[in-house]
Length: 333
Ligand code: 13P
Image 1 (cartoon, rainbow, N blue to C red):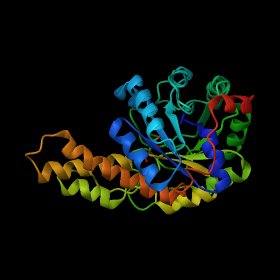
Image 2: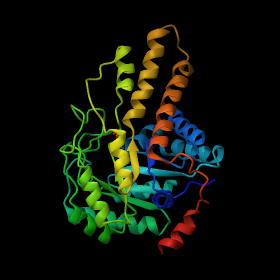
Image 3: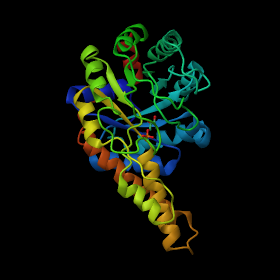
Image 4: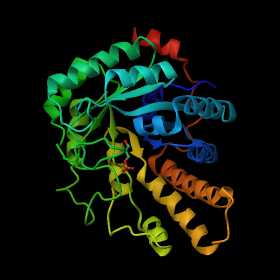
């Protein structure tokens, strides 16, 4: 099966009242782990690659790995999404490569660091929407900024999304999905204690959803940083400081209020690293990469499958016929 658009996945998720995990990848094992978890739980899924991932993997490798995923898992609707495109040129190159969805993150300037102004964000996002929709490809925009830095992308400052601006932004850009800043950040070090209402602004999601009931909302920085995954790393010589992520029950509350795409990267990195460290510590004589990549892949698959159950996407892979991009193109027109 061909890859499907993000828009179709999220429209179906909205109709069914569930969320869909968007999992970051950099290599073959991560793609395999996600697709196996999707098959195991019968889930539609979003596979996403940052600019850093595209340059690490090489675009052609990434494209063919995802083609293989479509061939090998024909029953799974899967969208291939550009995470945090920093400019229209990045998004256009992703679309030319075969991505079915792109994020134009105009909340930052093209350096990926400096917060932009509203008019800049509207202009670059609108430009990408026009190019993408003419090809049936979906677009995610972002308003407000997250904390933390991921793959060199991020201002490191939190600016919560303004609901009035969100309404104007969606009207003027025509985006399919809006990433909102509610106090989360990328990476393992999100909170120094369990997050409460004053650091994690879930009420903002409720307000934005009330004002924009037909716009799919996206939560970035949504790893939960579970203690067992951190402990597994530290037990075998790692040094992850005490830290808290976004509790799954907060994400579930978001899903009840219009959150349809949930970005998870850090939890998968933690799972992989813990599994590899364990093999290195317990079997220092091993030098076949498969001896540690297999358990790493299995550990990541377990986390992805758990999130698929928790976000509610499990069991929904066969609910609908995937629409080809040319059909999406006609719908947009
Ligand atoms: P985490 O670092 O919380 O996994 O967030 C990933 C993300 O938002 C990718 O865009």
